[in-house]
Structures are given as structure tokens and as C-alpha cells.
Image (cartoon, rainbow, N blue to C red; front, side):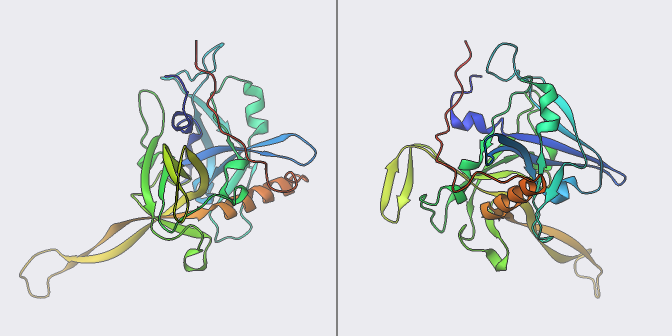
Length: 290
């Protein structure tokens, strides 16, 4: 598999996170970003949800290794990397379920042995205010729903839906928007993209040929409702059982909340992000393998 398109690149921008705690085990998603620092240098980081990391006694991230001497993934193999329990910070607002972990201390000893497609800060929609966003947009999110992945190649699962509320509006006063799409446990921490190939809307009455990609959020919750159903039919005063039903609506924290969490991580290290908006950066796939 040559990683020669943006769509293929996105399958190598996430990691499967295992949380081993006293209460048992759970699985979530994280994605890999890099941000430029004031004065030079880059800050590599893992972005996920607070609840994906909470209570962990061990955190293990699953990466795909890089083929020796090639810019290509070694599919069918995976590397388990122990993540530190103390190198992450959460958004300062306890109601914002985003956490960011500094990755440099973890990845530096591994050199170029891992195949990672970094998501640059420039892809955050906060850094590209000129992108037109309509009230209803198709979105793509990538992760490990219910812990599932391709068991042969160890790649994640991509899913699509539409925005159920406008991205630009804080739903119910929170920095979130809703997705009309199935979101399950394990999808927590999945990056949410505007990703169009061929054509995209560039204005109220404008259609542009080409590709568009922007990181607009991170999946955090699924919306549920409780209902009571009778255990037996046609019985007076029959007992009921309470069941939880999924509404096929996911909750995603927006790009502004992601950037605020990144800024908080960088500030705790006594640094700051590069001044001003990050210059637009064209995302191009790496060279094809020989």
C-alpha cells in the first residue's frame, strides 16, 4: 500500500489507546499532532479525551512500524508503546473533555522506527478562517469504535456522518457540535475532519474543484435516551425493564477547544506557540515506496 493520497495518510494519524486500570481495561482513540513553537522547534503531541486517560495505571498506545529504509508502513505489524502517566494536561475547564500529551520524551528513543502521519496545527479550522463552513457539512472521523480495528493490518476505521448542528455555534452553550453518525465507545478521541475530494463548497453559491481538509473537532460522547419496556405483554401492572438506546448522535468538542488545550500544554512547559496564525500548509503525501 503506497501512502500516496491524503485519505490514505489519515489512516496513520491515529493510535489505539489501551487504558489498564484497577477497574479493568478500556480502549479509546488518540491522534498525533505537531505545533510550531515560538523561537523555533516543534511540539509533537497526542490529543485525546480526558476520560480515555482517567484512572490509568498503565497506558499503551499501538503504532504501526515503518519499513526499514522506506517511507512506508510495515502493515501487519504493530508496536506497543508505553505512555507516561504524567506527561499530559487537560483543558482548564473541567467540562471540556480534551487532554493533550507531550510525546517528545516517548518518541525520541524510538527514532524513525514508527510510521506516523502528523496532523499539523495548520489543519485546525481555527488556523484557516477563510474556509467556508455551511450549517450542514459531511464530516469524516477515524478511530477504533468499540475497540475494533483491522486485525490483520492494525489500521483504524473511518466513518462518515453529517453535522447535526452548525460547527460555528456552541451547542447548548458548550464548545461542541453534534454529529449525525454512529459513535460508540472506543471512538472517543477520534479526530473529526471536513474532508472533500473532487469538489467542495467554497462560498454560499460557489463550488470549487479540488480537495479540502480541515480538522474541526474531536469525538467525546454519544447521546443516549432511557426507555422502559414491558417484560410481558397484556399483563396488568406488568413489570418494566429500563433500556438505553443510542440516538445516533455524537458529541464533538470543537477546534477552538482543541487549540486551547494545546496552548495550555505548551504553557505548562514554559513555552508558547508561534505568534500569529500558522501559515497555511499544503498537505502532501510522502513519496511512494520504490
